[in-house]
Length: 296
Ligand code: 3HC
Image (cartoon, rainbow, N blue to C red):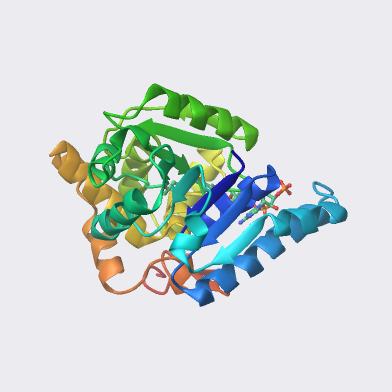
């Protein structure tokens, strides 16, 4: 019960692999892109070094953690012996359908198939397999090594033992799990995304500027970052796709994404990862400037 596979080595996938490896699990981190795997390996090294610098990890512990992670682009090899698979590929239902079809064929019947989806229905993902009782949501927050929460989302057909097992595993990862029902956006994004959207609408209506909106929420509500900076951090394309899932899933226009958000995504202003969103970034670091789009 110590071999797991994480599929997708992007920001969420590499963070998930790291926390499992730190808890002593043997992890296969799988990605079709070898350059993404190399990048993930660098990021994990950097994050572990950061913990060592802060005396939260001993230098001697690092090699064992790194040895617990095997980076591979071979799906079949990566899934071998896994009792749990955590899917963390992009939020595209067609890609997920194809992957869950493959996972169904390549994993034994008792293997748990968890998805880190931020809003897609777990019951839908389960319907792409012949073992819906083993499919469940395991939603980590970014940055995964830092954030305490894991949202556990059983689908309509998920077996109770599977939910119980993921609660147990989340605690082993030093995280705090909460179980919520399979509704669009679950709880975290159902509440977070309308707040971010409202901040973007406020900017669009010129109620206040980028700096004012973010500082008001930081200084007034003690949020660690303002909603516009957080949107940049999550990715504006991700925010847009989650809002669309909420709007379509509930059939309620109150979740309709701000036109400004739609236009920024169309213009390729995706936040930190593209170098510009509401702020400007250099090498993934925020530089003081607010995006030229919003400078007075
Ligand atoms: N990996 C590992 N550790 C990191 C890190 C990373 N990527 N980024 C920051 N840290 C650590 C730092 O080392 C530091 O540790 P310390 O407390 O031991 O010194 C701590 O986090 C704080 O970092 P900094 O002092 O550098 O910077 P901040 O104080 O600004 O914190 C932050 C950075 C933790 C990202 C904080 O700004 C924050 O909590 N922001 C909000 C994050 C958030 O809301 N995440 C949820 C997003 S929604 C989501 O993920 C759901 C999805 O479905 C959309």
